[in-house]
Image (tube, rainbow, N blue to C red):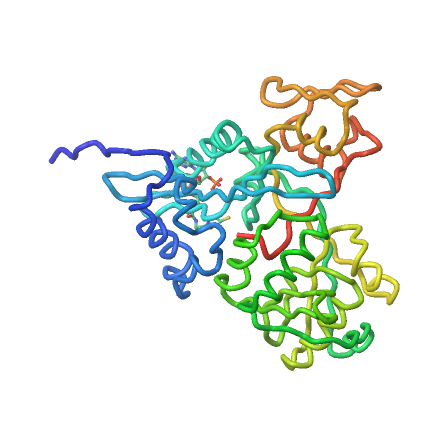
Length: 359
Ligand SMILES: CC(C)(COP(=O)(O)OP(=O)(O)OC[C@H]1O[C@@H](n2cnc3c(N)ncnc32)[C@H](O)[C@@H]1OP(=O)(O)O)[C@@H](O)C(=O)NCCC(=O)NCCS
């Protein structure tokens, strides 16, 4: 019997009436098919909300959603430098349709879409299969630090200054404290009130503790509780942040804790380092560079010229002119490793994308 050819629709963005179907598809691939609860909407509510459905770039075959890549458009800050970034999540293909190039087709489409439609400077993703993404131009880059604390070393941290500790994430003072102290840090994803509320109150398995001095917020931590506390976000006075961690550690009866900071953090990292805690460094994620010249300008670098050439970029500094492949340009800009051919005193650029904003 002759079979009809498949009808392929996409890659394209979702419409509001497709939201539920795409979310079901992602919950199937990432959760229920591997024996987990279908929690993806609550796990990443900043990404999976109806208002962002046009950025769920997907393909239907014979009417069914069979492959998807979700984009989270955000702004990411380091001091005065603010970049437009496209976070990538939910890269998934129906098991019956894998290894036919569907996810690859959508990823290539997403790079184009983030560049042209969303006007992004760069893209970020986190994955256990880096080689798959390398072929599209994403490369491990940037550096984050993590500090580990256990039942012995928790007592080496400073004690929290006296003050009221607020923990109700519906309390407007808590939301306001996290929003304002995060903004004052000027590092990581730029958040408004609504995004702060979503991350504190819709995102699953997240708790918060805020230390107040009267009406003034001093410090906060946002963490996932349990035997192993994971501090996903913090802000305010470094010493008070660690004091809050001590309080929460005792309340949870925790065995260990970890806290993530930007590399070269000036707030809590020096307090760990002076106490002899080891820095554990990781990549910030896999980055793809879309608009290198604009990135350099955002960081105030004006003596490097970058123009597209073939499958890479031609870089010109006052002392050198070289061709770099896409992954090497990512390393030149964000490191931490440096391509040997070319360098600049202000490169690699400092960069931070915090755990709470992950997807
Ligand atoms: C990872 C995943 C999204 C890939 O989806 P996919 O649609 O199969 O992706 P592609 O077809 O573009 O590429 C997959 C492989 O098929 C190969 N391929 C692509 N087209 C092909 C074709 N026509 N014939 C044979 N192989 C092909 C690719 O080269 C790639 O090979 P690799 O094993 O060397 O990486 C899919 O396996 C999946 O949903 N996995 C579970 C969820 C997950 O882990 N997502 C990633 C989270 S970061």
